Image (cartoon, rainbow, N blue to C red; front, side):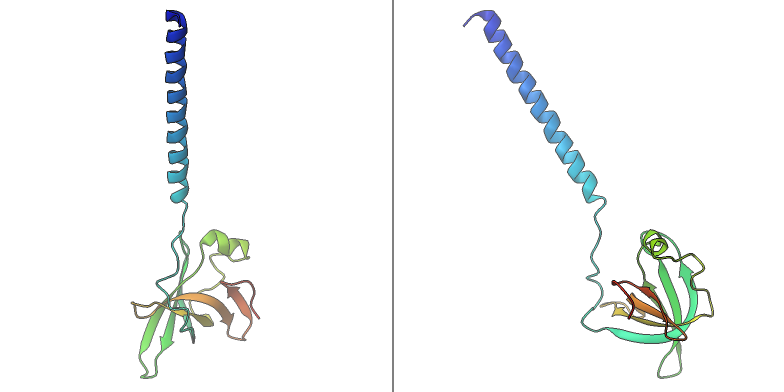
Length: 144
């Protein structure tokens, strides 16, 4: 093998190694970037213990990554407890026709959802109905 062919062979090997390295870095970068778009599960909520409560809206927090609905509920002992219900993102809510004013303080709602496993007065809302029983939200596919 001549010096020129040996030089070309080393150069081609170096180029292949460089391209392979760049490709590996690109794949790692894309994979790492995709993981940042990942979403946590709702494992903090107990979906085997669904509950339904009726109360008065105190606040709708409209911010990412999840909107929150706060509802005052009168407990069996007569004490008022403010429940925080996690909702989907504002973008998802807007796709379902919601606005920041879809629920306002004073609205009476019935929320069906899963309570948090380790936190009192926090839950994941599955459905929300207005005072007349009409479905106004579902975290599942449709309100029946």
